[in-house]
Image (cartoon, rainbow, N blue to C red; front, top):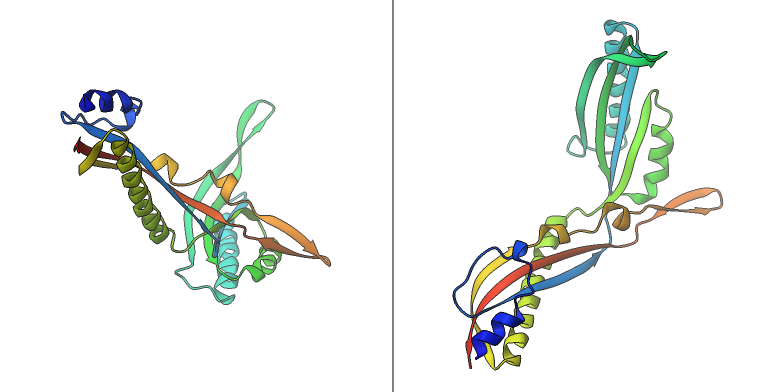
Length: 231
């Protein structure tokens, strides 16, 4: 009788999230956990795009412009570990004129990513970067330096919460959990959307601006399956 009741009770678990088939009485539960963390890093994504009519001119000008930005970043106290260049390109510059696609010289492009940890320097970086020729600041977002470590701890808490939930459900039917049959993390639940957790707020005070980090919620949801038996 217990076996029949348990099968009916836990049939509501979506099959797409629990593909394994078990021939023994079992319980499937989701364990959920979360932790609020104050971000300790700023991730910057900037780029330099240089246009010109000849390959030689674009190549020379672009190299100088990128070098100037890197010189400032490394001179500000950042190290090569904190600064990364990528997506370097030298391409033909195609534009539309009178419904026709025409070439207008060439362009050079380099993306630069870097990380800062002193939030009080945010405005200084912004002001200085805005003075560089052909510079675009694409994104500045908060991040957590030890995210992987925190995520692992939250996963463990989710598993523990799942076990407690499974134990309570089994006891409600005069049964007990015996062993673990499956553990599966639900990856789409581990983090909130970026716009919800990394909003950068500007607060003006006497003409100066500062940023408010707020808190980021690191979450985890884990599916656990336990074999059960009658008490």
